[in-house]
Image (cartoon, rainbow, N blue to C red; front, side):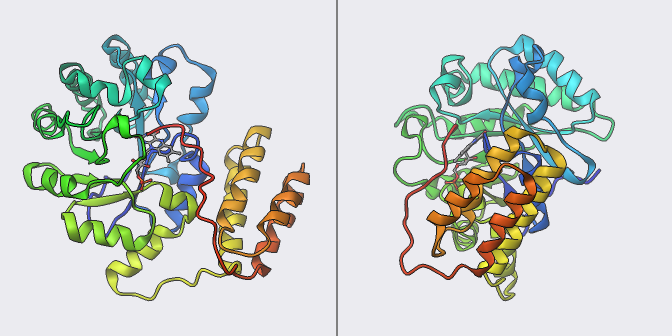
Length: 339
Ligand SMILES: Cc1cc2nc3c(=O)[nH]c(=O)nc-3n(C[C@H](O)[C@H](O)[C@H](O)COP(=O)(O)O)c2cc1C
């Protein structure tokens, strides 16, 4: 089992509900992503063995090192669930204190926890204590925003308290919960947190390209960066980021290169999930990778006709021959389920 690295040249994949599943994490790893976070999973759902949770916690030896992200607000469920997860071999955990989606807030979880720091720190403490029972020593991070609403700047106080509670790293997405994704991530606050904190700080927020990642490290001195939407559009963002940091030439991003990414994502999805649900999901994701190429509309239409994995592979292979478009539409097709 490898240890987690939190270093500038070792980029992370962010937790992405609906997307950072096992096949996508393995794809990101192939491009040099050092540590990959799971989709957030409900602690209560795990306690009651809800059917959806099994897929979210699916992993395999090649997935190492991964971080399992939990969300919840009821301490009584954290203790037994952490015990079970550690006994299953999970070693690295993250607590979600940043998700602003209504369904999550209603249960007092996600960024709502930032209005009750005692509770938030209490949950993190349970995770630290239980992760410590892993034979190789577990590790725990907390991912949070600046506060729940504008002006509620609790992130520095919170960071101090989390350090005292034994948390191993902090991830900040420098927006307020109420902002959702509006406005810009305030990297100056990331820099401030980095200056104040004595444990590693990971930066998240508006890292759409490898260049953004490099700039974020330079402007804020965070210990590492975490790609989220940037990785959904281009899983090779990790390789590009590492190349830029090390002054190496960037991989060429032509049709053949994108077609190979798609082939690999389909292969991993088929191998590690392989059911109808994952088929429909990957079919809807493929056109995103071809963004910036001419002929996406007909690609999308031909993908929708596919009902078998082989047909899908064949239909997607045309990406290799698509030419770059003159203008790229900036419209996002990512459903933001969280944060
Ligand atoms: C589709 C989507 C799903 C997300 N799911 C989660 C999640 O499960 N847990 C979490 O902590 N953050 C989640 N986030 C937030 C990201 O991890 C990240 O902090 C945020 O997108 C800011 O980074 P970016 O601007 O570079 O995309 C999600 C974001 C998106 C777009």
